[in-house]
Image (cartoon, rainbow over all chains, first blue to last red; front, side, top):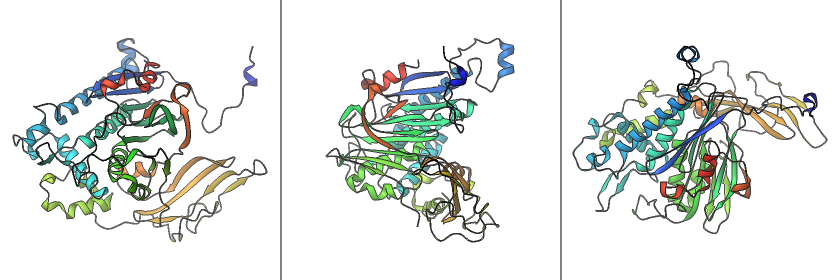
Length: 293
Length: 166
């Protein structure tokens, strides 16, 4: 019917190729985490290939390696939950809070996160602060606001590193990390939800590598606290930040949301980041990096 | 990155949290001055002038901009920007334009630094397209919004997107 020679010419710099694709969803850290893999072996089942074939093809995601890599990343997320959850009595964060565990003696992941929390506080002029007041008013080390972005960025990086020739996307309840190792696939298309009407998308962003995080109150009510007062902030509907690393996109989205409408200056000062703010009246603003001076 | 590392180091003493501050910051190599990575890079251009095709002296291939007009009102071609001196070192970007749209941006020069800086520097700020559309009619891979909880997921549109590829 169709003459192949008559097909429209594909863009010479990036002909999009339809690669097999599969997604997994895991409920962990109190939210759904979906992992998407796109590439030649995305849909292969574990043990489908003969052992000899598996050895020969090792390292390219064949013979169920995709599934196994996904399982390892999911296991990391569960381990993150065990260590950092403030809802689990025996978590290291709760033991540190109760004085049963010294920070210096805790898991290397806790130390890494503690360092990053300190960097985050500096980079946001104190608007991101992991030393939150508890219900008793006493401030304690609660890195929850950073752990999700850290864990997802890390998981995405690990999944991508283990799957040459494949593209990956990890979405943790609306915070998204992507990495493409192929160059012949279409960009991941990420949508920013309308916080006032969640069946609508207000903007779309194509992304191959990086992260996109949104802070807002639509799904969980007011849950971001002003570090100065400890009270919930409600000055914006949502802030979305897109950058090379989900961890920092998430930190800046959280800090900007706490700042309220004044966040525009902070966001414009971020090199390499693109931001999208939805104000209380529903108006929106796209913020690109200020020209370097 | 290095600047921040130094700033952190200088305030380290009073912070209990930073008890074992050596792992990632140690990779800075202890250097505390800004290093100019490329000896061939002689004269950084004054500002980030947007003049297409302008390349400063000492840049890799000055005058390499090729410009072919695809139509009366559109621009296509490859353009190399001026070298811009950032606090981390010189930076220069080359773009490929097709029908007045940037289709590719490459860093010709970027400041040397640790691996993380390289990653950031090779990253180009994407284009955001603003348009209100209903989710169910569009080809998205993922949706970003305020965090969806496990309880809220079943009915969410993201769950439908995920299911499409299970």
